[in-house]
Length: 353
Image (cartoon, rainbow, N blue to C red; front, side):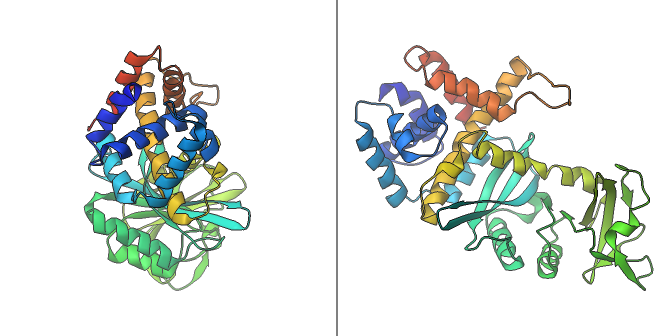
């Protein structure tokens, strides 16, 4: 498999696996970038080598059945490959879809990085709806087992991630948070003698004008700062334990995880195309997608320094850094026979930072 040797060699510096597993990982990443779908039959047709697609298909099936690719493997690679810094702004959100009668509902904890978010930990929810406090606390406890609490700059989450036990846990662990609350959430007045719906404190402000309520307020029986503003047809109201001046700016980076989900799905690798039904195997697939996503992102960042992405009239880039890198990398791996030197160069982005 000489055409894949540069990738196999560079991945060996990250993963202490034997040769057959390293070859498979390289094959899978290349095939995923070529076909941009997680459909196993499509991936099998894009594997390098002389074997027939049916043989590659069975090999892929064996990997998902037998090989213990863990979240720890993936997280270790992410930390090696990306300059995430000493403190991380964490984003918590769900992605979900339905395959037949199966609800695939994944709670993801990711770190904001350069306009997107990088998955660190995830948990499958055995239901359709939102997570509960117990599930969120469990995911954060896993994080705290692997990383020091001081790693966390703050945690951002949307309106579905509320609950007294959840917020109490974050406060006990001294985890700074910026969590959006519903407009009708009861918030105390400065003296604490009465409460009213949160939006009423902001209803007289101009659209887009941020306001920090004077003094910490009582919300669900806990003392927090409340920051908010009117937005089109709604209110953006965020609670936090400290530094309310930066709460809305930090919370805005929560959107990075929505960008991530778009890249993993329709704008990138079409995660929802999977026909895998066992959650353990879907977890391995998400790990592989994360590795491919990081590679494309790193290449896109470099491409942007050489030829900046055009800015459209609405002020946003014409394409994401991820898509910029994916397009370049896809062009290379679809033409490996004539772009061997470029492929060797592209693999260097996966060397340890």
